[in-house]
Image (cartoon, rainbow, N blue to C red; front, side, top):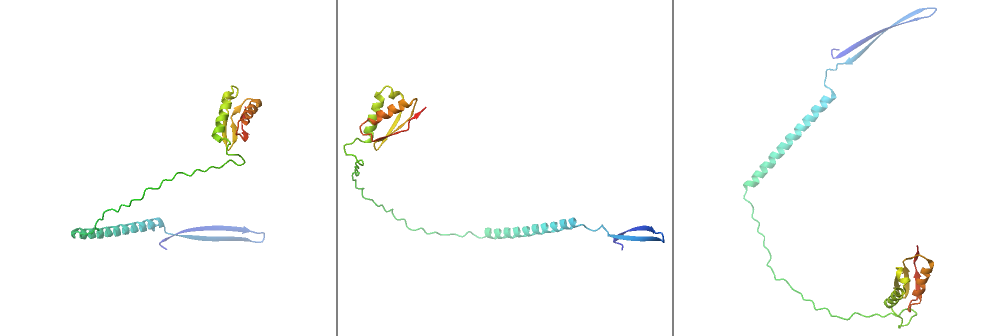
Length: 187
């Protein structure tokens, strides 16, 4: 038991009863292993160190082999590679015939339900702009009109309902206006 430590405890217990007296002595011995050996941490550090040393040695040996292989290649004369290129041919030029010019087709669609003599949108737009511009009250309001297929769309802002109605009435009276979309805001 040279590698273990011992610790002894002695305890005494007395119990008295009216009929008898009893005394119990108890001895207890605990043994601990000696702690002078190597610990797990030291052992792990040694193992890691050995693995690292082995890896360094392997890398050194592999590097040495690579240097030897490079030295062998350097001592050999370089190989000559001959590449034969195909004979060069002149480029082929293909001329395309000039495109045949045809006049653009003209498509005339008469307005549905209307006659061919009804004015187009640009003429209606010009007539509305002239009518609003000639009126001194309406020309100051800054109303915008867009005409599409005879439909006049009014946008802008006026101060009263009367001004809004006057602009719509003036536009409805222009020849060629089929309908009016009054989006004027009163503000």
